[in-house]
Amino acid sequence: MFVSISTTGTAENPASDLGFLLHKHPDKVQRFATAHGTAHVFYPEAGEQACTAALLLEIDPTALLRQGRGKGRSGSPDLALAQYVNDRPYAASSLLAVALRTVYRSAMKGECAHRPELPGRALPLRIALPAVPVAGGDGPGLVERLFAPLGWQVDARPVPLDESFPEWGDSRYVRLELTGTLRLADALQHLYVLLPVLDGSKHYWVAPDEVDKLLAAGQGWLADHPERALIIRRYLSRRWSLTRLATERLALARLAEADDREAEEIDNAVPDVPDVPETADSADTADATTVTATAEEVNVTRSTGPTGPTTAVAETAGAAEGGRERGESLAAQRRTAILAALARTGAARVLDLGCGQGELVGALLKEPRVTEVLGVDVSSLALTIAARRLRLDRLPERQARRVKLVQGALTYTDARLKGYDAAVLCEVIEHLDLPRLPALEYAVFGAARPGAVVVTTPNAEYNVRWETLPAGHKRHDDHRFEWSRAEFAAWTEQVAADYGYTVELEPVGPVDPEVGAPTQLAHFRLAEPAATGPDAAGPAVTGTPSHDHAPEGSAHR
Image 1 (tube, helix red, strand yellow):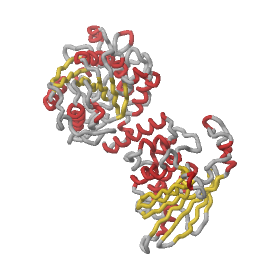
Image 2: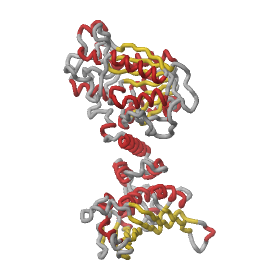
Image 3: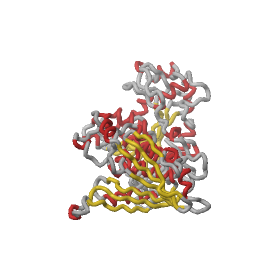
Image 4: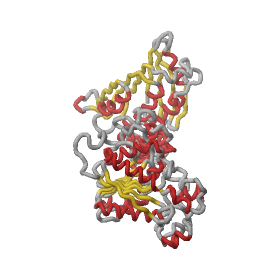
C-alpha cells in the first residue's frame, strides 16, 4: 500500500517544513513495525520549493493470516481461500489507515514541539493514492461526496479490470488524488476515517472503542458533513448499537458546543449510582412498581439524605413518599395527575420533553387512547436506559410504531416537535438557568405549539416538610431554582398570555394547609386553533435541532 503527501513552499516558508510536521527527517529512510507488516517512510523530494513524503506499507501475509485465523470476535469472516487471495496487500484500506495513525500519530494530533507554530498553518497539499477500493456502486461519485465537502479538489479515476479488455469495464478501485489547502492534521484525520469508509469494511473486529477513535478523528468536521450518517455507519462496520452510540454522542457534542458547555455538564440526567435499594426513602423516590430510581430521585438521596413529609401530613394524605408499604410515591402521583390532565384533552399524540429514563413514556404507552409518543432528552445515556427499560427492541411492530426516543435540547426550535396534540414537561423547567427559560418557552409554546402543555415543578414552600432536607437547600443539586406557588402562578400566566394559551393550576401530592402540595402542575391549553400561516410557529427546521432560540440564550435538559 502506498500514499504520498506533497506540498510546495517558498524561501520564507520552505516546503521541507513538512518533515517537522511529520516528525520524520527528509534525509533518512525510516522503518516502523505494525501489526500486519512494516511501514517505510521516505522523501522522494525535499527542498524549499517542493517536498513529498511517502509511506509504503509492506504487508506480512503470514501476520495477516494469523490475525484472521480465529473465530468470532478475534477472527475474520473471510472464506479460507479469501485469506490467501485478496486485495489487502496493495489496496489502501483500513490497514493503511492504521499505519497512518501509527507512523504519523503526533502529526495527526497537531503536535510539533520544535516548531509549535507549524501545525496551525494551512498548507497547499496534494495526496496521491494509486489504489483505493470503493464499495457500493459509483466509486468516483462516492469519493467526491466524502472529500469535496472537506475542502478537497478530488480527482478519482476508475481503474479498469484489465486494460487489455476494456469491455470488461471498471474495477471497484480508483486512482485518487486530493489537492487542497488544509492543516496537515486535518488531512491525516480525513484519510484515517474515510479510507475504511470507502472500502466499506475493516480488517479487525470493531469494538466500542472505535466510537472514541471516530469522534476524536472527526472532531471539527464530522458533525457538519452532509454524509455524516453514511460515514458513521460504514466506519463502524454497520454495527447498529455502535452507530447509534456515535450518533448520540456526536449530537450531544454539537449541543454542548452551541451551548458553550462541556458535554459532561449536559449529559447529566443519569447519576453515577442509578439504582437504589427497595427501602430507599427520598423526597422523590422511585415508583412503587420499580426498583431503579430516576436520575433526580437518586441525586436527592445522595445530596440531601433520606427525606419525607411529616407524620401528620402522611396520615392526612394516606400517601407518604417514604416506603412502599405507606402508599403511592410522589413520582407515581405526578404521573397519575399528568395522565388525567392529558385525558381531559383527549390527546392522542404526545411529546414527553425531558423524558429521562422513560417512566412517563411507559405509562403513556399503557393508555389505549395514545397512538404516538415521542420522548426527547439531551442525555444519550438516559435514552439508552429508557430504550432498555421499555424493551423497545422486543416490542411487537405495531407497538413499536407508537413510540420513538430522540436526542435534543429543549431550548432549540426543532421541527420534529411540531404537530402534536400535547406536550409534557415533567420536573424539567427547574433544571434551566432562569435567564435561559425564555428559550424553552419559545421552543415549546411558540415553535412546537402543541394543543396542550402540562408542566410540573417542585413547590419550594413544601420543602420545610421534608424533615432531613437542610434549610435553604433545593431538592436536587441540579435544580437552578424552585418556585413558590405565587412565583409559579405568575410565570404560567405570563407564558399563557405571551403565546395564546389558557392555564389552570392544580396541586399534586398531599396538600398541607399552610404550604400546599409538594408538586405544582400547570395545564396549558391553546386558546384558539394554531395558525397555519408563515408566522405561526417560528423558523422551520429539519433533521437535528437548529440553533434558533429566544434572544435570552439557550440551556440544556
